[in-house]
Image (tube, rainbow, N blue to C red; front, side, top):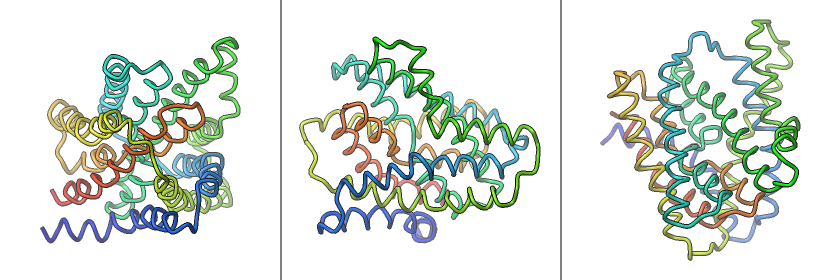
Length: 306
């Protein structure tokens, strides 16, 4: 029990406090949704791409265990598809919202939540699986945006939707960082430090903004859908990751711990951002983020103590 409490206080609480602070100040009327939206716009267009560039410039992916990362990603994509299908069959969702709930259930808040906790909890070499998952997830995120863009502007076609990704800051950051990483050149120190400096703002600002947004009154008519998203993320996803990585992959818990940390992290804030942008199930996703955040406060310290 002492180990669980220590993990909570030393690794989880420092990250979670920013979310709680944003929630509390919004309830007191100090910050509002428009201000939080401006913060999230900065993160989406500048800080999150800087995180990706920083990770790609400073990581030796030649040392990454691609089998471990692949098993995690296989479970993630499987959960994405199953949740989307459940949304269509059980909740009668349209294509757009099925994609959004699939994103919500399968993609953790790894950039602004899991990665900072991993940096507190593990030595640098053990965070490489988390960084690898983030890099591959950006590709799946980009494909998801293409699907949503195609659905939103069906008349313009797939080619136009793909072409719009040329302006996607996350995708551009991924391509640039990968090019430098694969070229095995030494990037300028100013670039490395600049990307790292900006990247350090993403987690606290993003969690704070998420707390502000989730403090607003939410429509409770979609409680079942919110429960489905949160349940798939916090109950099914960790079990699926454990089954694939520990049982099927044969990994020891210690080797897989940082990857499993991502699996028990809450619904990512990008799901809410996409729901706002495309007019989707915003309130259900917002509730699922809030519930999964609370559950992660209990799950992560236990995982770290096992």
